Length: 390
Ligand code: C2E
Ligand code: SIN
Ligand code: SIN
Ligand code: FE
Ligand code: FE
Figure: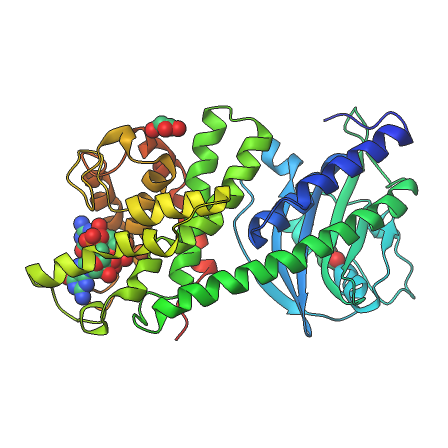
């Protein structure tokens, strides 16, 4: 990453970043990308992004090059804090004003906000400059906060954020807010579609489909990194996958309650009916037009196919099975084993990993095993961010 040499280059970077945002449909992928792109054009070492809802600020995602370059991971986590003016992010959320702070340790006593050192202490990090921007929608409501931390030179020295970053950052944050509104609507619509199933199978809930979406992206990311998939393709695929994987079981809407909610094992006949959910899902998603429709249909139809050809509905084998369906199959079974179902209790971590290991012999794509294994910690973190609602 190089510092923009002049304001023209900087401006071009902001425009390019904005163009990427408007093409993203999934809310989680979008939040991550808003931060990634903003860090790129401001040359920021670190940053965090929050969404704002009523009186809460929800911490969604953070990035930190220094910590990653030490070989440490940034945990996948989400938490909420009250929206009050005493933190920088809270102040920006409450007032809709940006904050460009040269040195967080020199914030005047009389400022309403102060810097919370606990993160720096915990992570052995040193925050100096911050640029905190409100994501303001077209109704002038702050829907998110983007906090960039430690602008740096090409020599990785931390410097304050230049004042040109304020205006263009503000423009960029507006694009981000618009994209965020649309992505929120998309998520709502997808969840409504999923909830038509949930009505019937209360144990297989909204959190389940969100987990399957996020696990699938984690596995894909690992695979894409190893296979050096170009950024543009990777960003597009992970976005579409995040949404499409949520609909893997949408065909269960067409299966009777008696079968879906049955506490015990299914009879052979019931099992046959149940297996129809793949064809039903593909039927719901027929008339593919966008890459989203196409991937969603591939996944709904093929997520129970097995690598050795023993799966259903068509008994496809190996690379005949669409790649994204092979990924989602892993995510789906991992979640089914580690969660409660009408017909089973959750399994222990150890039992889950042992069973998954066994299933990589003939059920799952063996080429994806390393990507499942390397992401297991991430998958478990994702699981805690989407707990079952009780
Ligand atoms: P699901 O509960 O989402 O399970 C998804 C997949 O996870 C299953 O696909 C299976 O591959 C895997 N899985 C779930 N539990 C176990 C397990 O105990 N051991 C192993 N090795 N794998 C497991 P499958 O089998 O094709 O089932 C598709 C759907 O059919 C399930 O979705 C569930 O809704 C229903 N189902 C399957 N078995 C039963 C059952 O015994 N009773 C009831 N009521 N429903 C069942
Ligand atoms: C804030 O904006 O104050 C929260 C994060 C931080 O203190 O660095
Ligand atoms: C692909 O089909 O695109 C990838 C093949 C694999 O890694 O299994
Ligand atoms: Fe299924
Ligand atoms: Fe499922």
